[in-house]
Amino acid sequence: MVSLHFKHILLKLGLDKERIEILEMKGGIVEDEFEGLRYLRFKDSAKGLRRGTVVFNESDIILGFPHIKRVVHLRNGVKRIFKSKPFYVEEKVDGYNVRVAKVGEKILALTRGGFVCPFTTERIGDFINEQFFKDHPNLILCGEMAGPESPYLVEGPPYVEEDIQFFLFDIQEKRTGRSIPVEERIKLAEEYGIQSVEIFGLYSYEKIDELYELIERLSKEGREGVVMKSPDMKKIVKYVTPYANVNDIKIGSRIFFDLPHGYFMQRIKRLAFYIAEKRIRREDFDEYAKALGKALLQPFVESIWDVAAGEMIAEIFTVRVKKIETAYKMVSHFERMGLNIHIDDIEELGNGYWKITFKRVYDDATKEIRELWNGHAF
Ligand code: ATP
Image 1 (cartoon, helix red, strand yellow):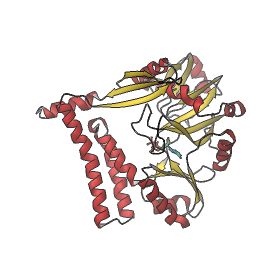
Image 2 (cartoon, protein in one colour; image 1 turned 90 degrees about the vertical axis):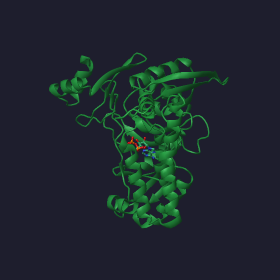
Image 3 (cartoon, protein in one colour; image 1 turned 120 degrees about the vertical axis):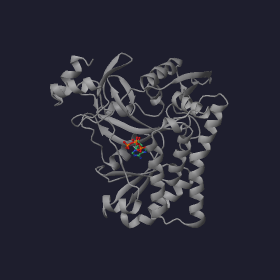
Image 4 (cartoon, protein in one colour; image 1 turned 135 degrees about the vertical axis):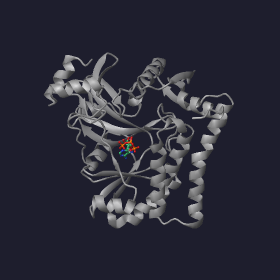
């Protein structure tokens, strides 16, 4: 049940009573709590309040992070979207999205879905200068948490060798969700020493060859891609490298039955467009064909063998926390997200951190593989 306090705020935001009731009934808005702080989380979007919006009180309203459209034909996409106007090209860092804001006296990190993440909230002080929020309490830092020790992803970008880091890519206003212009963001990041995603500079359609070269380089370096943004942040599109498309398939195929078919189809489509746009032929084409086939098949076949040998399909995650309690809070957080994750190991690192190993078990994938292996007919 959503309390009257929040219903009152929603009415003030322009949602009518009936809409609020329907949202509540369908589970589109859910009341949650983090360390005694109550908040309302939007699982669906409603009247300008994007999915993932979090309402703490009348002024601390943090809109959901907007969807970024994707181009699959780089040249034509850039031409269609930016015409001949300049745009910034930034790295698309492969991690998980967080929105960081100060609410009362606490600095909180929110996930894309609108949960307060206990792990990121505990660690965020390691990456963000608190002074920023003292000077700008109305701003939200949006960024990617990325690295090999992430609670949500099995891999990170190649240049984060251990632990996890924060990379800023957007600064938004509370309540309106309006992004500040790129140059202002760069200035604030420098002023407060907040690490930003790499900004490759201003490009335009005329410099498409340089952009192609950048994509080739990022792909070779095992990086995910780019996000292109008009300086005023009004137009934003993303483009991913062929490396990332193949690598995502490789990571996904181990848990083939747990992912929607679209996960694979979308990435095959993007790779096909890349190959077509770049007119890749002969040996180079064969190389992609082999890489794609292997990415799709090898981890899948290996997971079948694992299940045939009596194992469960599982993924292991390691994170560093300051308090063991945070690890237990993460377990309840995962449970609320509907995931089956438990703590596998706890190790004291001696530098004020604990290393926690989580195991995520994929029950459905394991069951399906086991039945098929045992000869069940469907
Ligand atoms: P979407 O709703 O945008 O389709 P998605 O969950 O499918 O989101 P992606 O396709 O990975 O996500 O791309 C968008 C995400 O990329 C953003 O939500 C953000 O977390 C991440 N990201 C990484 N680097 C950047 C960057 N430089 N600018 C904007 N977003 C970035």
